[in-house]
Length: 181
Image 1 (cartoon, rainbow, N blue to C red):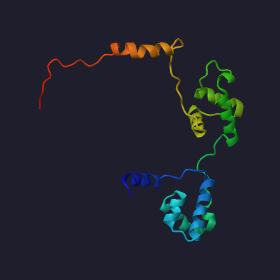
Image 2: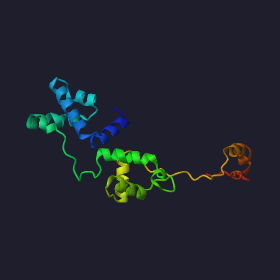
Image 3: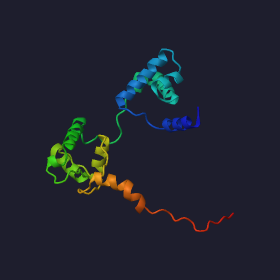
Image 4: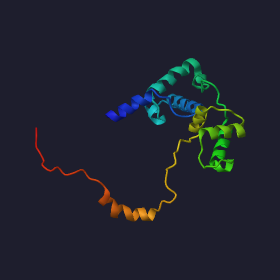
């Protein structure tokens, strides 16, 4: 195993596998079925894209707790305020744009989205809570580019190769180059 793969393996071995709890439970059951079919733990790990240590843990859990030991665990912490269908509704509302919701500009802000969630879904969020909801549905912060309305791309395309090299400052050439140690 080369250095890069060792580093990736060491990082991934301490991180939770991505996926919903039900998907991960299915993966654990697949691993157990492969082990019962006579496959080696290393081979099972490669097939399922998990660490050999995880397969070993699942194998040890099975005789003690049976298949119940491989079940998905409830998510720790408070339940989300928005259901999956409300998140889909929120995304549809956001896709319509701020103008469709009566705002003067076409920019979403956390404050506007918080108001939208409260008005349409009946749930109150702090601004940081709105940020977490947006990240959860795959939205990210986008800052619009500030460009003049009068910008003329054709004029810029002609100006850049003709005038810019003449205007651009270059470092001055040394008058008397000196050599030193």
